[in-house]
Image 1 (cartoon, one colour):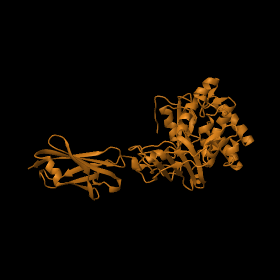
Image 2 (tube, one colour; image 1 turned 60 degrees about the vertical axis):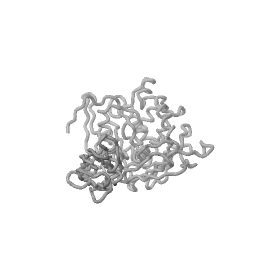
Image 3 (cartoon, one colour; image 1 turned 180 degrees about the horizontal axis):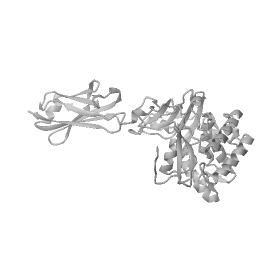
Image 4 (cartoon, one colour; image 1 turned 45 degrees about the vertical axis):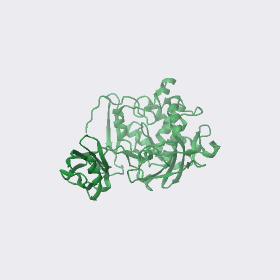
Length: 447
């Protein structure tokens, strides 16, 4: 397949603070495999690498749940536990616990617990052949904090405003289990949908500008600490150094030299913390895999998505992507989203109603030519407008069978209509799409 854009390779690629152009994102997202994917018809998130999630919110918050992969509960109070990680000490290179930071219990609005499959670290591979590991998650957590700390060798003042906004919401996290991986996050904020809240706190190593295994980011961290490259354009401009580009340009020579040095030393970034989760064998294996990758592709962009970045031609402004043979999902996994599951509605009932008598109307809800499954129907509501266009009644239709609902207007409702022409409006909302379906029926009421 050949795809053309108005521009590509516009800005440098790096997962931490690289190109944000839409055409560049087309490439980086093809190499990504996020923890959760947004539904194209509702905006709610579905699990991609997650198994399930639990959301607990403070009582009274307007949060709802729609999809079964998330559970939703309420609590009078949600406290951050003493052993939760709440901040980062850039000098000691370790996480700061709640018991060290807070002098009294801290309450939050929500707690999100994400559960990953038991076979996650065996099933998911990086494009260079390395297995996804806990170290990839830990580095994501560390970089969230470290770049905003003045004591860090990779401190970036341009990142501070984003970090401050993050800290207004984030109040702590805990790794509850490593096998399977279970992570709790305590948040002093909420979303209206539990699915969106859960998807925002997965800590999966897919950064804002693309995927990033710890061993490629380690080279970038070392290069920035040595003031040879910078993740962000702001810092690069301030220090008059190269904006880190993991796919082309002068950055490649810097990263290749960093790779040789890191492999020789067995370098592990943030070793006081990362060393608890990454074994020496993994360090050696990762750098060996990366060396083979660079020899084959001449770049450092290692993702885990359905496509890998094969070749980059910066002069011609073209790239080639190839299918990643070890991607764990079947091609038809998301085939159900190939077209929207729109509902169609029809209403039948009497054309004439005597005021004061009961009137019954039948509503049919279909998906194409078959009844719409009741489990996927969120609501079937109705409004009755009188001859003056005023709302005379409203309510919820009663389900009587799959795809069939009934509306009964009691005698006191029809009595208020008086004599004249009226209209029954039916609005159906379904879970698979955000677009409601409408139907109406005109009827005359007589005395």
